[in-house]
Length: 308
Image (cartoon, rainbow, N blue to C red; front, side, top):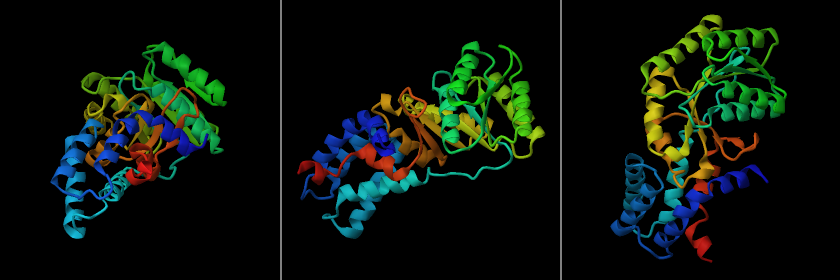
């Protein structure tokens, strides 16, 4: 199955929740008027696009309607605006440093360690050398899980003892990665609630010691967000960005929710790049974020096309 088809399948629940409604709103010949916009607003809110982002999209359509007139193709205009908004979340920073250090953070249950495994497999598939740092020392299960992912992908794992110093594990891994001229070091950290100050301070310590050992490290701080949490994910993103300097997001479990529209809210309100999307159980169920593919997978076919 191609990458686009996998993404389209992953977003089935969200698409099914809104595509039929969009087709009803965008019936051929219908005017771009207040009634249409009100129905569209309800649909976007039901997909967890969020009030602020929904208001932004509706305002853009109103503006286009004033310029083009009531006969404007509202369906095409919405798709243009969704793609434009999602493009704000596209970013692929070039690798920096040797190794390029990626710190992966998030709350418990988001699929963080699994995302580390998938990210490592993705880099390995690109022909890059990768090493994992099992700095989630609070959960012995997380260390074992990462070792399993490493074995499956041929990726070395540097681990310490359960309940050990996570910052020390990260430093040991950085030294090992540098000695082996590794392209990417991915550091798995313990899941933590974003409102627990002591745990967030520990995360800051990991970043601080990495920076002391290598200038510019960590080069990326990726926050794993569970799409099923919807708008609550925005609160997590704000707090982790404030304390951990998040540079991008991994959006997970998009196959398990009808609230995939939260990606629009993230792109619009946080201005943070969505670097990757994760879905499914396989290590290969993981792709770089693509605005156009995501928009098409989210919204489904154009209304007139599906009506024919």
